Image (cartoon, rainbow, N blue to C red; front, side):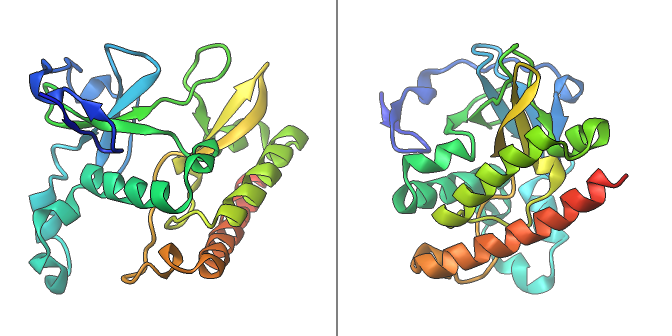
Length: 225
């Protein structure tokens, strides 16, 4: 039986067998709420799993009391990312995928439901490293600055929605060992209660510009270490 996927295409996840990801130690990356694993069926994709110590129920319990009245789905990062991408596809369209990975759908795994997302790799097949790691190794060199300039122009022009752009949530895709493309892999979506940027393009560009200025400050600080 087919059903609609996270991004609107059809899939057959009801009939899928669980992907075996191993245990949490097999994750190649992780954040406050999720762990990332290479999809064992296709290395061009990764699977984002909710951390066992950061379940939606535990996150709701730790939230300010007013937020505790929200349904559990608002504390599930995978479901919220799907929601953000649906809005992104309606408002921005395919151009967004120069700046963020594509997502596919939720899939069953031995560690619970996981969100299947495009895995950004360099041209030698290695998983692209974070902007934070690049700055620690090489600083803000000429090639990186050129890639960042292209990224910033596109991000502002499209009015991309995000919370603060942090160095560890951005990866540097490389070709021939040189920065080629900057990709934001987490922290998408407006932080505001009312997402005015979804309705007013000038406001979206203004907010995107503010996030870029904050990122520029982080890069300047990181490059100086």
